[in-house]
Amino acid sequence: MSELEYTKEKLKENRENMLYKKLFLITHKVASIKQEKTKGVPYKITSWNAVHEVIKKELLDQKILVIPHISEHSKEGNLSIIKLWADIIDTETSQSIHVGDYIGYGIDQSDKGCGKATTYAYKYLLMKLFMMEVGEDEDSEFSNPPVIHNKQLGKKESEDII
Image 1 (tube, rainbow, N blue to C red):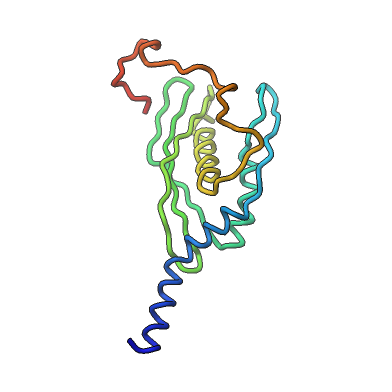
Image 2 (cartoon, rainbow, N blue to C red):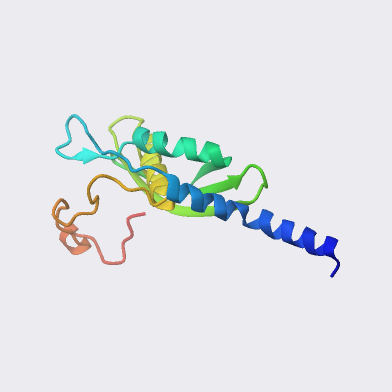
């Protein structure tokens, strides 16, 4: 292999791995998120605005574009459920990857349930993809209600939520 061919091959390898390197950098540069107290909820929450504020600058610096896609949605009473995935695109190399699926739930009496579910799923996609820290352990055993099984709800074990 000539020196020119070797150089071209190395440049191609570097270009192909660039997206993963950029995602790695974002993951390690992203700041922690401060949970906020909100009206009507007895605990602190991680808002979309807090996640967006922390991640937007890092995505811009690395020239990364995130395009979310809803693959499934349903509505049962006032509960909207969506499944979301995203394309992560390096705008400098056009390299992309597919990440997902993330589930979002939104409860609303009017037409805002799907939007709430989408925001919830997209927020968690970003938080988990970039391993974002939140103030306290969000999955604490002490703050979660007990599990209710399908039998307790009068459903068969084979019935799926989505």
